[in-house]
Image (cartoon, rainbow, N blue to C red):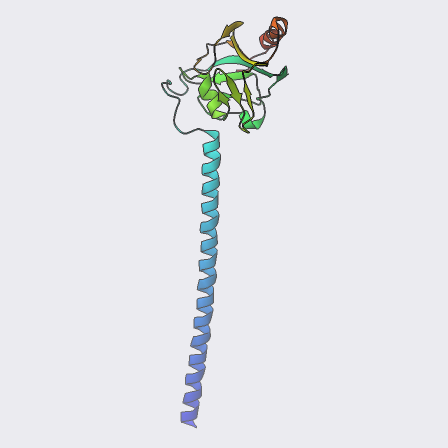
Length: 200
């Protein structure tokens, strides 16, 4: 009887240890699964943060620009496509770069926060193509000078060849106009631009 009892106790102990080991293994597996889940969530969050940051701020600073925050000046910008005002007030065009941007839900005032930042850099940060012949939206719709329509640029009522390399001065008024407008219609667009109340 003593031998049988000992064997039963040994079996019970072995059975107890096996159950404990299974429980421990299961708990470890659950802990590893939870930890792996946390790592995946953190990885996805980090990736999303990186993507959002890269959309907000293009890599690098504008070539040849001064210190960020060295100045804070403003200019008015009006873009007219076939006589319709293009709206920069949507979130897609707000504060995409700290050096030069539209802000505060306003699509008429451009803020420059460092010296020597070109309008080309502003449009690049908005993912809009701009040269002397074409104005190209992010979806690749392009408005280019052709036999019927022309892309025109004005700074303070004076027509200029393009705005890409232009560095505006405080309170400048800039017009980008695409269409076949006559002088009277262009003057009406310039008057509209003059009526902008620039925000600071």
